[in-house]
Image (tube, rainbow, N blue to C red; front, top):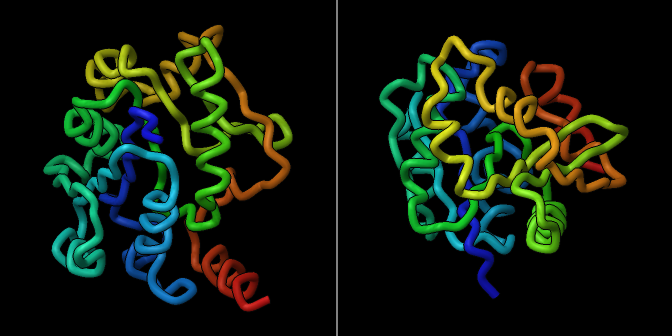
Length: 199
C-alpha cells in the first residue's frame, strides 16, 4: 500500500555541536545516517529523499545503492529550513511530505508508520507524534503547506512558524516512547546512545 507521502531526511548539517559529522558516526551495524535511512525505507513512505550538504560526497557513498533520491542543498550553511525547502522542492509528486532529522536514529519504522496511519485517518493537514505533551518527529504535512514553507526566509522561526499559524489543523499522535523526541547533538548524547544500543 502506498501512502502518497514523501519521507524527507534533513542530513545536510554541519554538526557544529558534535565537532564532527554525526551523520557518519558508527551506530549499530552501520552509521547514524544509514540507520535513519533504513528505518525510513522500511516504513510506508512512497519515496525517501535525503537532503545532503556538508560532506555530501562521503555521506552519498556511505548510503551506497539504497533506493533513495538524494538532493544537494547549496545553502546548507544557512540552516535547517533551507534543507526542508530543498527536500520539498524534490517531492513534487506526493500528496504529503514528512520531515525527519538525521540525528534521530531511535525512530523506528513502526513509529513512523504510526504517524503515517494517524495522518491518513485524520481530516487534519498536519500530524505530529507527541510524548508527554512534547512534539517529536516525523512531522507530516499535506502538500498544501508546501508553498507556505517555501515562502519562509531564514530570519523566520522556520517550520515552527506554520505550527503556530495552523495549530487548529494539527493532529497529535500520542506515543508511549521518548524516541520521537531524542536526538544526538553532543558527544555525551552519542555515547549514551551507544551504551543503550549495547543492552
